[in-house]
Length: 415
Image (cartoon, rainbow, N blue to C red):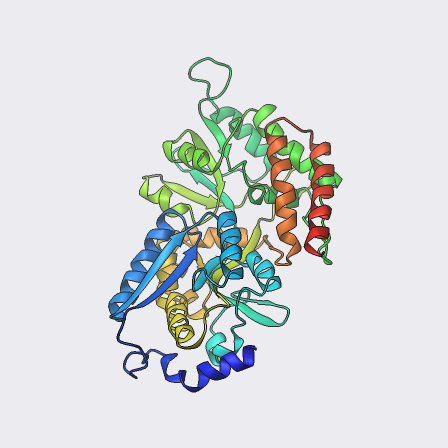
């Protein structure tokens, strides 16, 4: 199937694949409407629209629409739409969505449309392969969490969790006398287990083994969950509850001195006027291990329903959105590590102190699994992690229930 599709594109439409698409006269005179679904928030969404506007200016008669969806919503909505033969032309997101999309046959293998010398400009990890095929072209590498601190409140970020707790007790303040701090040392998104992974890895745990079997019911998981709860309930240096919006608002307003978040959020802190720095998440004192946030590529995949001359147009857009020029625009605003080698050689990368610190955190990160089973692991972790943070389950109960639910969901995937 893929070879027949490739043959059609490489034959009649081959002249349409490069920058000379319009000049060669391959485009129809009517408007060419393309669509991108993504999960870029805030500043990322704004930069994406700016690049789309520039693409449209360079390609008269083309119209590209972008649609934001939260990560899980993006995944499920794309699957539903693509199964029915519809959905966007390009879908953008983290590398772990490649496994499920490939398993369902929803995205195109891309290796036949890109020459080896073209792909050679991507740094290690910038291209996402699965089962021997290239399914995602990355525009950034990392997508990882780090410690972000407000310089007005924290002069030197804590090296380990002992220092974090001591600093937190000095920073936390109860302004209204209700027994709870009104300013906190640290905050993160309690709703998503992705933000819990650094604690899990810092205590020596992980989500699955090399055979994609879940490893959730472990002493390491219990210890990491207990530590997360202790930070807010025992040491009282974190808020009782925090989702993505709450965590961001606390940090931007100065009500939280530090936040665990990724580069997708940093542009918003700049616009909010926060003088901030980036550092590694503090080393776990009990284990001596650095927390290892999950690292992954973010990039674009093509809907399997895209064919023929439309595929040629989509490839033109894909090449534009992953070009060195566009990757560097995101780097300037979001301090992201570009996926292209040529982009990493630019002065904007070498001269960016935030990016240097982000790469320092990246050194101790761990690749996010892209096996389809990872979807079941996330679905099993989320409600149980939330239950622990809300005080509805003990760490031991949650670890046991995570494992059982993950195993059941994986069995359902394999039916």
